[in-house]
Amino acid sequence: LLPPNRRMFRYCLVPLIFSFANGFTSIPAPSLSQRKNLKNSRAAPLGLVFDVDTVNEISAARAAFVLCFFGAAGSAAVGRSVIPKTLDAWKATNSLRGINPSSGGEELGLFGYPEPVYREDILKVLENPLDPKEIVDDYPLEGNIRAQQGYLVFEAFSQANADINQMAVRAVFDSIVLGINKNQVSPNRAREKLESFKKDLSNLQQANSQAKLLGFSAFFILLGIIGAADWFAFYHLWHGWFPEWPGLDHLPSSLFSQETGLTALPKYFIADVPDPSFGDSFPMP
Image (cartoon, rainbow, N blue to C red; front, side):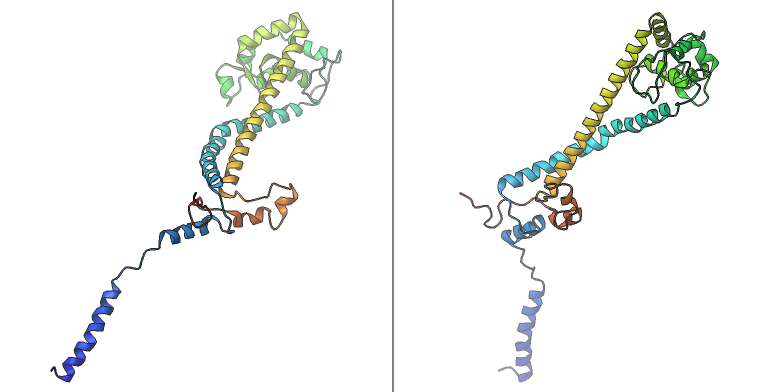
């Protein structure tokens, strides 16, 4: 028999060894069902249950959002730059109102101007003896890149007709260029157009109407494309991360409701795509 003190040491050593060994035993990993339930808790914070089709729609919407977002933020961003340019051109045309009195005559019925444009004012512009190339040379504009490149810009054309009603000057220049918010044109094209207008004033009226129609049509088509790009990006963001949000059901009051408004969006947010195989929510045949 061992002495009492050695027997006591043996009885204490065995539990100590087991305790020490247990200290290095790894914690059991969560089971597959536990992991899926954890993912479900992040994916559906409202306790919602999604079927397989809905899960597939969420995945597809997230993939489509990436494409739509870069389309709306990239290519459409170039188109967006046209909007402030068009607004600036509209403001610049309005600023010409009342500059130099009109000589009167027949009103030509040109649309897109804040005041009527009259025949006698147009004829004065067309009777200017300076050739468009001479206007470019005689009225250089420092800091204007297009003018330095040899283009006829509206500012120089306006200075060459400084004593004439400026709304009529703008109307003639708009008839030379193609589209709206255009402020430069090649001297050769300007010469050809001016000669055509001198022969028959109806050519000016027709050219002005065509330029306005083409310009406004292109502008509104561009707005439609940009709006569609933004809508598709928003739509796929909505269906990819907030598929159960009903905020657009009863506009505009739904946007300000405590339950469905913009402030309630966080509770509808889905971080992870739900797994269509967790729990009993997706029974297999």
